[in-house]
Length: 241
Image 1 (spheres, rainbow, N blue to C red):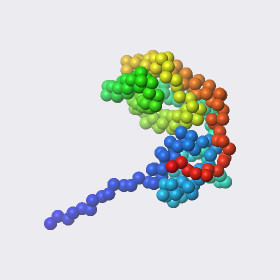
Image 2 (tube, rainbow, N blue to C red):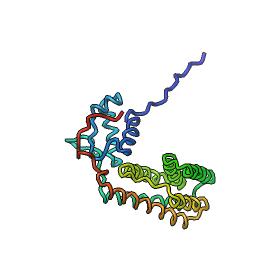
Image 3 (tube, helix red, strand yellow):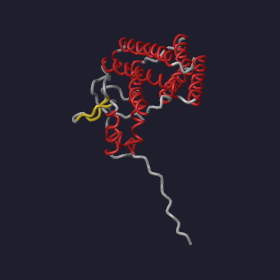
Image 4 (tube, rainbow, N blue to C red):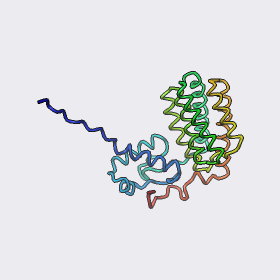
């Protein structure tokens, strides 16, 4: 009788891999505001883990620039500076324009069809004035265009920087207005990409991203307190549930 081989169990994800995306999103959406210290005991209790996997998760977020690990204060949400904001927005522009030009040559027809589909859905959300869906689809369109460049390093760099830009938009309440101009601008960029017109895609995308950067900077100048916690380096008393 043949010997039955033991069934191998799928490898379980490390605990910190389950914690990282949750805390990352909470930092991006300012549930943990800049200057806030993350309370390790409460987070350990919340996630049902010991300090080791929690600290592993905090190290990942520190590597992404969202946390600062200090000996005395523990993990503290970083506070963006004006230079930091300007630098990240400039790099986003460079990366996206390069990726869009590369995508004109490297994207498959299936990838372009998917981008066109997402863009059409984005237009339908615009027509309904559905801001939440519009901005979610906007992020998906940009991510799909980056992926179509087929450059893994570029994708990783853009993903990391995009988290900071998304965080700034939440902190400054700087979501784009659903204006005809903003939609037309984005549509021009996508139409150039679908036509594989590398020169026009860079021109239209740069104009679009520079307007978004100006909007973010304007909002942060109007509301500089958005970059600071109510009390600098204050101790958190509760953890978001």
